[in-house]
Image (tube, rainbow, N blue to C red; front, side, top):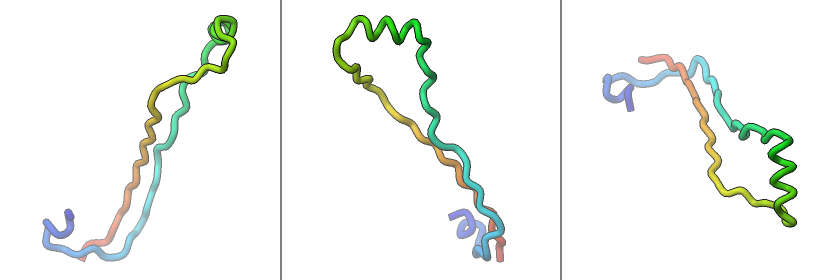
Length: 63
């Protein structure tokens, strides 16, 4: 898209880097985990969302 806006074409790719990824939630301190287990006889199911972020950087030659 950017190459087209500049009126150039893309040549070969010089490098491609990937970063980011999944970050697990912080562990619960044991004192809170034990208290939560004592209050319930069943296995707890936590609602929520999972976010994953991936960054990709490509370097191309321009013609």
